[in-house]
Length: 251
Image (cartoon, rainbow, N blue to C red; front, top):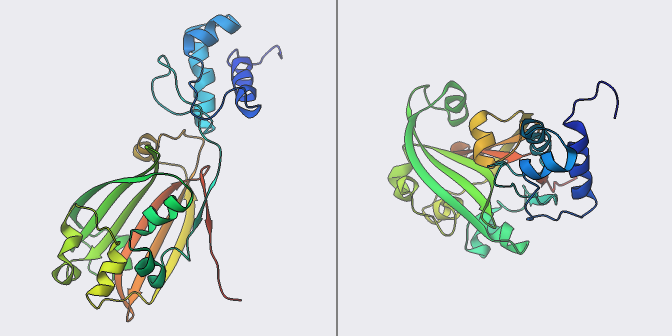
């Protein structure tokens, strides 16, 4: 150890190597502050700092470090961002895009849904082609994989659409997905635009998704059109260390 190296570096390096070598597997409980403190003869505060380094790197889950945190699954989940939302695929699958995509990977999807009517922000008003401050409907979803939080997905709709598709304002799940349901009501999505950007997570996002401050999030904004009218804008927050978006485009 270098003369000026902080005391937490050695236990952090050891814990990182235990994870990368497979000695500690995904889902296992990470050493507690007390265990690390005893092993390396450092204070509990120093041990806590070592664990926090691994949380920020996305290798260890957030939570109560004294009780023990979990080793994260380092596998990256491929999301077929262009293929999964096609209308033919939605009609054939008969279930929400998220549900069918995750089930194909042998995982168990879940989502908690909350519905609100909110004033459109300047950005959302521009996307939806409504006036800033005008009421819009939003379906907010915290999505999980095998019970663990994976992404946040908020879908915004102009209020005029809720007259034809009142289920938008119902917090119950729409089994076939809203895009397929809209097509049944004659509102057929014919194209969309995706906007992608990366940024640090907000404190609320870091807490919801249980990610460290060192893990960036990918913000995917999908603007969906039917007959050149905007019918939905979905803003999805993906943890940058857990997923990759795949686009299949014609040459």
